[in-house]
Image (cartoon, rainbow, N blue to C red; front, side):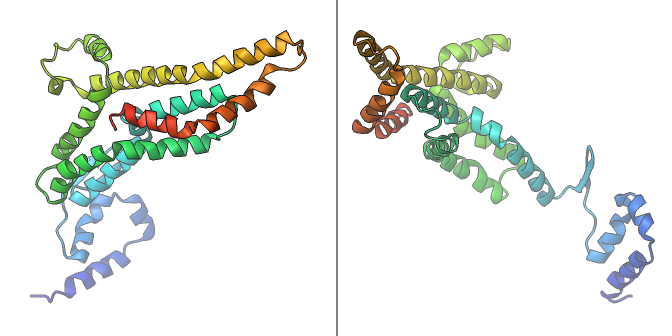
Length: 264
């Protein structure tokens, strides 16, 4: 009976005698027994994907799922979090102030990201407790973990999705009328939540516009009445709007109002 060291040595010798062009042209499945003999392990089942063949162990599946989540992360951020509402409000605020590039887009996006993280932190904790921890301990499968993780996110979106938007997508999907919130599919909840966030963001943005619009109207009326027709009203109104915004601590009021709109 050969010693345990003989199998890897023989496998290594066989691998060295294979021409390099044969290694490049031959399918990888032909060398799986050889590699298994070299490592001392039996080859696992092969998972065939378009353009990809990996072993069906847990590490390979985890890598595939991780890459998929990273690819879909921007879409998830835009469609299942308050990021859209916050960014719309900041855009309307900057337009109302009359400052075209201050704060910059990078600053507003960064602040929106951190506010989104702050709002979604309880949801993330619930997902980690209900889905990730059982999955790490092997108590649930991957599909079961995804189903458990969708529960807290679903409840969050349903809390801010309007019934009118939900009814619209239930009607368009031609699905039976749900008896409770648990029966509403995610393909209905997500677009309804996006529409609700867009409307809420535009509503808050319109309210933010009103006081600054009054300043623009008053400034235009005063400059016209005193005959300053050559002076654009925006030259005078912009510093006044910025001064008013700073005096009332506008950033604190805007961010605080946004957080309170999410029941904080």
